[in-house]
Length: 176
Image (cartoon, rainbow, N blue to C red):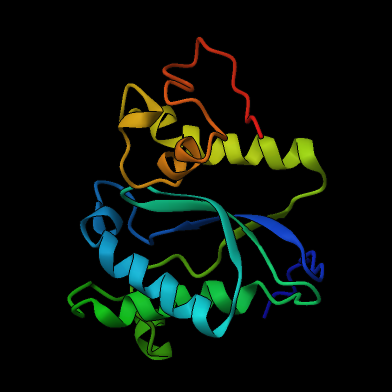
């Protein structure tokens, strides 16, 4: 088994990317958005973390989360979110021999990408990246038009202006 180098930082804030196994033309995440949200809520009850920013796209999601003081295990909550979401979906995907032997579902890529947030500038850059993503992928013309994002909540809190990043021609800034 590979020995991945992970930055295990107690109470750390991390940026994550989690992808579906079959990405092309797959809208599974937004089609089942309420199931996904419920899975995240359930996992947070047993393994608390704070979500600073989250965007769900058709085939992947990005989020910035902060672990409680002293907690360093970010992998368990990610695994449990993927696992619980998989369990509530009907088992109708085509499985590879490898996944079948391991008793795995064919929904998520096995791994995820994480980045330990280093400072305030890094935090702002990753928050902006989370929220600009639907625009970047051509899903909307304005960030405010994508419904599956914490952007709307952060607008209500005064963190972002409603018209933030209407297009790439505008400067990107996370204001706190």
